[in-house]
Image (tube, rainbow, N blue to C red; front, side):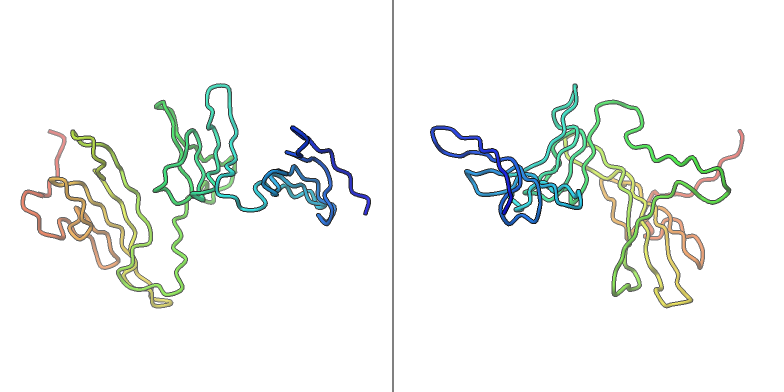
Length: 212
């Protein structure tokens, strides 16, 4: 049918092939003959696909002069690491750095008055309900025993999802004796007002200072 393939063999056995395979709809492929799978394919519309057969061990890695995992797609974990292998407990994106410069910079060069750049934490639920948490930022570090702890948390919450009368809350919590339970926040900002020490924790005072 007019297809052409270059085979790479070892000991008389085809190991890899390069070219247009039979029945591949004019796609150009790098094909693993030993395991009968396309490692990479360029379709007729110029779409490039890696790991066409969804193999769990077929990761995709981009190396730089100083990092062997500058960009890594972990096929078995369905997640991406930038700067290192992604951790298995990260759902999609894990960014790792070594220095103290900006880890991530989101920049807009727009000269208008509209807000930009923006970051949206979007909870696209089909059944939003009161008291649903819809996103949070955790300020996480190690304790003296090497365990992870959220020393500070900022969270968003739905208090009323009713159309045209929606209300929300922003909750701020700092760790107190190792506790970061959001039911006992330092401050809660709602449409009805602002509450400090909503959980009534002992020793969590409210202090306003002047200039002396």
